[in-house]
Length: 214
Image 1 (cartoon, rainbow, N blue to C red):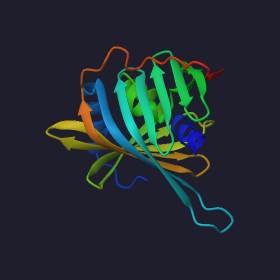
Image 2 (cartoon, rainbow, N blue to C red; image 1 turned 180 degrees about the vertical axis):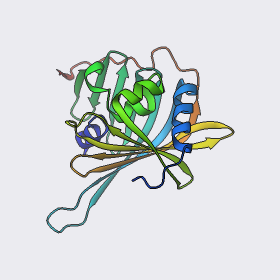
Image 3 (cartoon, rainbow, N blue to C red; image 1 turned 60 degrees about the vertical axis):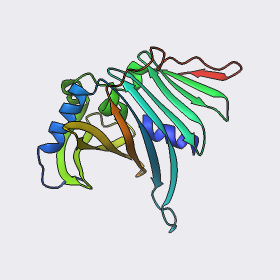
Image 4 (cartoon, rainbow, N blue to C red; image 1 turned 90 degrees about the vertical axis):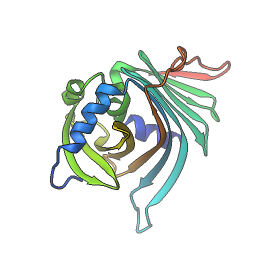
C-alpha cells in the first residue's frame, strides 16, 4: 500500500462548464504562495475478476512553498514522506528505511503536485494540462486537468476549491490513472501563506537508509 500511495500521487467528469473553477484555480496559484493542511487520502482500485473494488485510506500533513517546494508526510497507517526541495524529489519509506531520489525537472511537469503546489502561474500549468471548468459539487468549485502528454500514467485530475473569508482554499484532489485506479485527497485545516521554517523542505537521508537515485 505504501508504494501504491506514492506511485498514484507522483505518477502519476465534467458536465456543463462554468467559470468558477478556473477562476478559483488562477486565484489560488496567484495568492497562495505558501500553505499547510491536513489530508485524508482514499485510494480505490478497480474491481477484478468479479470482486468488488477495494479502498485503502491514509492520512497526514501537507505543506508547500511556491514554486516547486512541497512536503507530504503520511502518518497513518504507514509512515512515509514525499519531499520536493526545488531540485530533487525525495520519497522516504520509514518501514523499509529506503529513500528514492529523482530530479524534479524530470517528474513534476504533468503531475497533481504541479497543479496544487509547484507551478508558479497558470501559464505554466497550461503548458502541461488542458484545463476545463466543471460544475460545482459538494460545496466546491472544480477544475478538470487533462495532461497533454499521452504517454504518462495519469489520465485526469480534478481539483476542488472552496471560498473561505474571501480567500480561495484547496478542498480536494481527485486523481485517475491510466489503470482505472482513483485516489481522492480531502484537505482540512488549511492555512494560507503561513510563515514556514527555512528548512521545511530540506531532506537528508537518515543514517543507514538505502538510497536509490533515478
